Image (cartoon, rainbow, N blue to C red):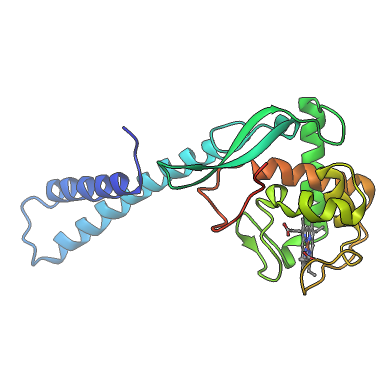
Length: 222
Ligand code: HEC
């Protein structure tokens, strides 16, 4: 059986009630002692539940565990498919798809993704963008940016690139030269190496199952 938020909430309330009844035996509901005990029992039960949920979350957001893919997912084709049961889009990882013309070893892929993350942090991309929903609302969310159809449909020709990753890397380096929206992204002085790392990071991130976030995202159909 799968435990969702409803089962967990009901379990927490039922356990609080049972323990509450046990620990308040003999005292009437009109006495302050009754409510003091109820408050202590409920708080303790909730603390235990929160700890369990925290460890459960920490385990499932680790790389290679459940929703978050291994670093080597950058060597794979990532697509976005509608899951009828869940009623949202989920990333689908299939077949080999080299990134920047090569298959990256686990160590290399991890180093590249980490560099991408550090660059994104040091350039404060989140001042304007959201990543996994965190950040500024000035520019598009970047969680699924890798799956944006525009790289193949529009940007590839615009920047004169042969592949999606090259198109993205070139665009990120000089976005002010190739604007696509009314708002322009400034040139942030990103080097070739940094751009590659950012693209790898964004490709890896697009394979995270985010329960369909961001909503209404239209992915590349190919
Ligand atoms: C000053 C605000 C600002 C900052 C800082 C910024 N961006 Fe942007 N970014 C924008 C705007 C505005 C757009 C939309 C521009 C367009 O599509 O022409 C954009 C678009 C993008 C896109 C295309 C998204 C899509 O799918 O349409 C990517 C990828 C991107 N930015 C990456 C980055 C990265 C990586 C950084 C940090 C190194 C960064 N941005 C920093 C404003 C910003």
